[in-house]
Length: 94
Image 1 (cartoon, one colour):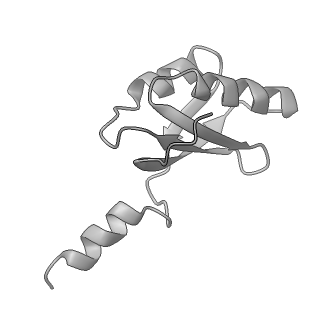
Image 2: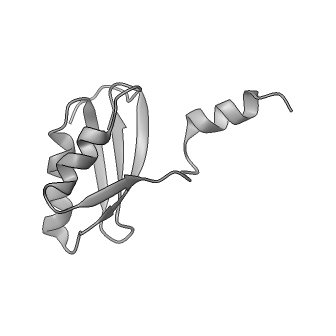
Image 3: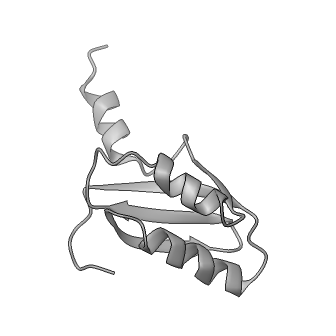
């Protein structure tokens, strides 16, 4: 884990987690990926917050790394905490 501030945060929905060991495995997989500076995995909600060092980082490789280890993940598109999307919405003329 790095102390750098993230350029972007994404919320992933992750299937396949059943125990604390799965949570640790998912967290380790995420932290092994380039440009991932932090990962916080929640078993109950089956989600992971991932902080990326590069805002334009394609996450397909992250999703694939999870998938090959048995954890199917997708980006949650209705993320209420997506600051970038909120700012864009606020700046659009009505």
